[in-house]
Length: 188
Ligand SMILES: C=C(O[C@@H]1C=C(C(=O)O)C=C[C@H]1O)C(=O)O
Image (cartoon, rainbow, N blue to C red):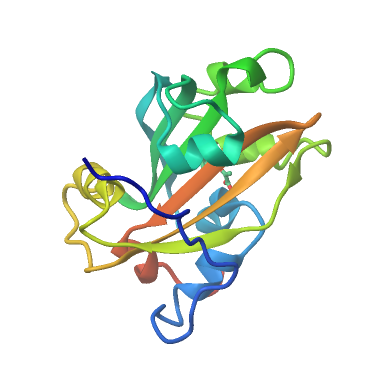
């Protein structure tokens, strides 16, 4: 039985020694990731991988103050730029937060969550944090499965932050596919 002996280490800044310089702006830009990608491609879409009630992982549950085993709405998508998936995103919304504050979550479909989040001035974003996921982590394999066509590096870098609306939390995590580095550094 694997017992987690410590809290996960999400870093407030990507370490210079291990994160490619071109990836660092993607891990740290506090603006909308959707908008940043859209500005660097001709065609953008959101492919919904899954959106259903399920148990968040322990670290997500802890961050959202959920009891072990408590269900939450989990939405996993691929952000696709010019036909290539560049981000695997996973958003976790506690069940009790769906009413009122986050009712957008259900009707969003293939519209990017970010477009709604950043359009609402009441939504606050807490600071970003990042982590390098390797093959020992189940999330690495979930990302690899979703990005079936792309060969992943030994370590996939991801970021996450909590969005708050009327004090109710939505956790958004975003893992970057290798193809993100093929997007131009500057907007088109
Ligand atoms: C939070 C944002 O929304 C993006 C779109 C998501 C979705 O549609 O599920 C999830 C996470 C983000 O990558 C953003 O654009 O910054």
